[in-house]
Image (cartoon, rainbow, N blue to C red; front, side):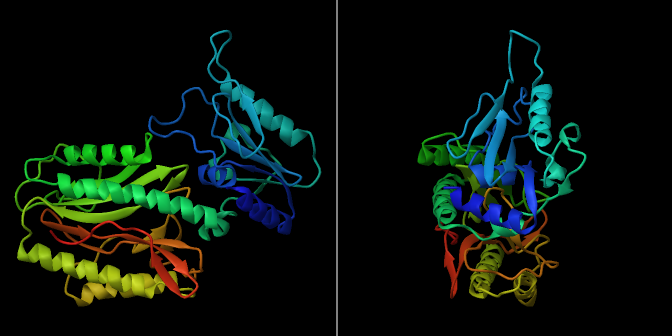
Length: 361
């Protein structure tokens, strides 16, 4: 699947006269090789450093601890856990990097320095931080199909959330039902984020689920991101513990209309910050508090990618970009509504990729 990504990266590196490169950003490693280390339990305690990708003579090589492998590219492993000798993972990793960098001094060496531990940093390298970001913004056909499967998982989670949201349930109870539904749909353990918070929280925009019980009159923001094969989905809806009040219904309908308006703005050549400005103005003109966050962002091998729909961003939308749109409106401790869809920028507009029910009960 990642052959096209490596070919595009190779052409970009060659155009910049970068002969050798060391990639260290997690998103770069996954985008180039498909390798995505498990994240449920945090960083592996026996790894000597982050997974790396070495580029030289048009070839990409993954450098990881010996527990891991890849079918997409050659792999250099180093020993991690061992009981037959002291654990020296960092030393083994450093020796590999020194060997690769030192075996040929010809040509320019590029390094993703922001994500590379200082003890691994070559002294004669140039920074290539962010170099792959524009390439990652436009998805390949294979990436789009992978994202469709990711969004389908989130859709399954939302269906479960709608059924589970009842007075007397806690945030964490609903989250457990969501996680179970997504794991069953995927047929495997799936990393899951982002938000599951009841509207009566003072900070009701987002956060991890906790021991907050839903009461009659409460609503619940459920913002789901599930990772499958190294790629993230995203989507958001609001569910109600009882019959919504007139004020809840009115806020929900305005945000739904704002989302529909945002989708209508997505097309090639649209400017990211213009979309952001127009959707914010839509909420303001309706007389509701404007959301204190982005209007949207892309997803891929990381949960937030370019294009970001924010006030500062002048990026032009292109066919093949996937954009999350998530307007909202919040009154702390009382009302919280955010609705989110994924859209694919097509040659003549946008295709909605998420299918979860965002309607009122």
